[in-house]
Length: 396
Ligand code: HEC
Ligand code: HEC
Image (cartoon, rainbow, N blue to C red; front, side, top):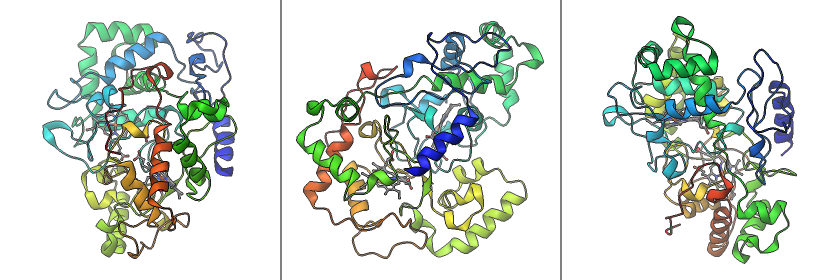
């Protein structure tokens, strides 16, 4: 939890932000004044960090929304960001592994974009520092939008009078000055509006509303912060909770795909990277490289198979789970933790397993309580700035 505090301090220096008292007002041109979306004071959430060089404005958010849903930015005209981050599915795709153009599959599960605005790094391995950097990758990834070059995006925009007029209004750019960075900024601004809080847990914990959670959920919460030790990674702070320490841990998922082969694989990956190989393409097109986890970004062997702790907000709506979508239900996730990071109790653990993962010795009803607790982290429609579907997952 200390790390989350430290991170907040670091973040504070990166994005100087403060509470504004007007909603979504465009910062005056050339102003260095920080901006913040005032609407984001949903119970349980901190203010959304807004980079000083990309203030929120209503017109920019609307432009980002349009770009996010535009299928023309793909090699076969069928893929937009929303294919894999579908509002109706809490901004995921409901698949274990995402499907891009021409039915091509990648290697990883699509995370929800809800509250991604708070992530100090993006992707399961944190290879992009911010939403702006992230948004440029899928467009030119061979198994996602499949374009070969960002120029293809710009050509479409430059041939569309509506887009041209809007980019002129929002960024005061046209022609050659209109770049992929403007596109990325607009998409990131839209994504910064996808926040959701004020769940039953928030009302119980931050608003002292004792009846907001059921008895089973309260027992689950006690396990979450007690015997389950979940809170050591899925953190809860004094006045808000994002349920992630934003750090990277190997919790024993997917690593058996490369177990026997790690030294050779790690070596080959580093060589390819040193020759200019693009990490985004390498990890999303090769199943084994994908399992290297955070190592692919830092070259640090101790981070083999380590992935970013995901938020648990709305987790009830985002099955299947984990970076490889290998666990179908929250109950399966609980069994994995209870076994100490292996599929079957007593199996040997992998060499890189986090020290924080050990058998928990919880009973089956206790695992059910933990699952129930996680369902208290679902935000209702009115607690989000988008429509959250009602849960259809009775099977958890
Ligand atoms: C073909 C499916 C697909 C498409 C299309 C797609 N994404 Fe994703 N998205 C994914 C997958 C899979 C990941 C996780 C990849 C990884 O971590 O290596 C991801 C990760 C992300 C993340 C990181 C979230 C986090 O918590 O770390 C963001 C943000 C995101 N996508 C936004 C976008 C935007 C914006 C677009 C359009 C420009 C887009 N995605 C297009 C599948 C897709
Ligand atoms: C050592 C840190 C750590 C601890 C302790 C921990 N988690 Fe996790 N959790 C993670 C990481 C990292 C992932 C993603 C791993 C991956 O995909 O390889 C994850 C994934 C999950 C997921 C899947 C979320 C999704 O969107 O796919 C759930 C649910 C979850 N954890 C719940 C819990 C619960 C409940 C506990 C306590 C019993 C717990 N975690 C303990 C780090 C941790």
